[in-house]
Length: 614
Image (cartoon, rainbow, N blue to C red; front, top):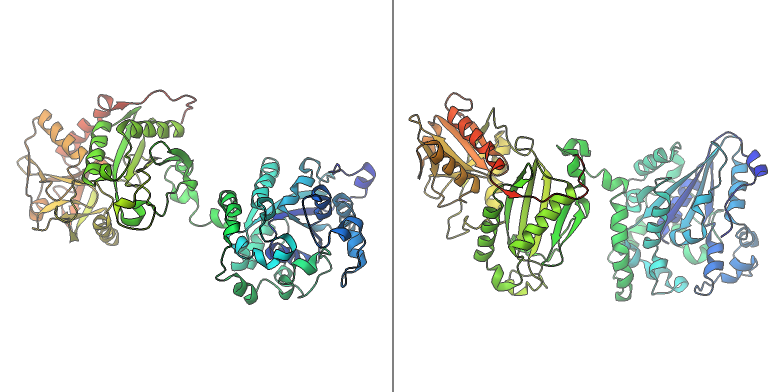
C-alpha cells in the first residue's frame, strides 16, 4: 500500500479547529452502512464509504469476483443507474480523500467518518495515519455483530460475494487483526451493533462521548433511498438499508432477521469466527456495563481477573474469568450431577487438602463416576490446584471451590451412559478473607433463623455425598436473606437440628459441655471434625447427639463451622438472644486454637516461579 502520509505543504493547510477521523471497521452487513448514514446526517461530517475498497480489489483481484470489478479498477463503467462521477471518485487513494475532507472542514472542524470493511485492513498503514499536530485526530471503532446473525443473513447478497464465504469475507477474524494493530496506541471503541438497534440514542451518545465529539440528534434519522456518500457498488448491496429512514422504526429489519436457517456450508467459517467475536464482545460497552461496576461487586479487585482451571482428564487448562465456561451438555448443567469441595490457602499451605480430596473421591464413588468414564486422579487434581494457585499468585488469603462433574454428555439426557468424555474438573480460586462480604463476622457474630425446609433424608439425597444438588440449601438461604439473617437453621425430618444451609452447628451448655448434632442428615464437615479434635486436646467435653431447637435457643453459646468462614459465633436465633448476645469464651478459645492450625497442618505449596508481591 502507498505510504499514508501528508506532505509539509498539505500540513500547512490543516488549520487549528480539530477534525476527528473516525475509522469504523466492520463485517459486511447493513448495520455498518446504517451507521455511515447516521454520521452523514450530522451537519459537521464528511462520510466516506469504504475508501479502501478499490485498493483492496487491486491487491486481491486474482481471487475476488465482483460484478462491478471493471468500473472499480478503471473508473469507467456503463452500468445503468450509477453516475460516472462515483466510479471516478473511487480512483482517489484514501489519503487524497482525507486531505480533501479536512480541507472542507477546516473552518470549524468536524468529523470524517470512514466506513471500512475489516478485511480491507491489509491495505491500510496504521503506522502512518494522517497527522497534523493537534488539529487532526484518528479514532478507531470496531463494529461487531454476532456471527450467527451475520451468517443467517448471508444469502441475501449471495449473488454478489458467493454463497460459501471465506473466513476473510465474513470479517470477524480481520477485526481481531485491526484490534491488535491499534490497541496499544489508539485503544478502539468496540461497539456491538445490537446496542445500536436496542438503544440508538443512548448508544450513539456514548460512542460520541468516547470519540470526543458532541452527539447530535440528527444522527437518529436519514433520508430513505440512495445517498450521496454511497459507493458505486450500492445497487448490489444496499437494497435493504435503502428502505430505512433511521434507527427507529426498522420493522423490516426485524422481519428479515427472524428465524433464518444457517446453511451447513457456513459452519466452518462460523466456528472460526465465534472465538474472535466472543473476545471482542467482552470488550464492548454493553458487556462491560452489563451489571454494577467492578468496584461495587468485587470485595477484592484482584478477583476481576482471576484465572480458572477447567477441563476433562488430560485436557484441562487455565482461562481468564470472563472466558470460563463449560458445555451445556455437561452433567452439572443437565442435572446438577457433580461433587464439590471448598478449600482454604493459608501462608503457603492448603488446609486439610488430603481430607478434602478423599471426600471428593468418596463422593465420586458414591455417584458412580468410576463406572461411567475416565475420572481425574488425585494427582491430576492436585496438579490443577497448584497450577491455578501459581497462575494467580495465591499463597495466602484465598479460597477455592473445587468441582468434579460426571462430565460432558454426547446428547441431552439424565442417562450416565451418554457420558463418554470423562469427568470435568473446575478449580475456581478467589481472593477471599475468612471474614468479609461473602463470609461472616467472627467477632461480633451473626443472626440465624429456622428454615421451613427440612434437611434431606439419606434415602432421598444423601448429604454424605458432597453433591451439587443445592436447591435444598438455596431456598433456606433465601429465607434468611428475606429475614435479614445470615443463614437459616435446618431441621431433620424428625424435627431435630441438623445444620444451617451452609455450615455445621455447635452449642455450649451452661455447664461447659460442647454439643453438635448427629450428622445423620447432614455432611459431617471437615472443620466440624477438626473442632471436635481440638475440643478433645483442650479438655473440653464434647458430644454428638440429637439436639432440639429449644436447646439451641437456650444455649450459653452457639457457633457455626465451615472451611470458608472457620468458626463464627451466633448471637441470636429466631429472635432469641444467645447467652450474653456476644461471642462466648469457649467460642473464642476454639477460634484461637483453630487459627494456629495452618502453621502446622496442610499441604505445602511449592515455590511459584515469577511470583511478585501481591
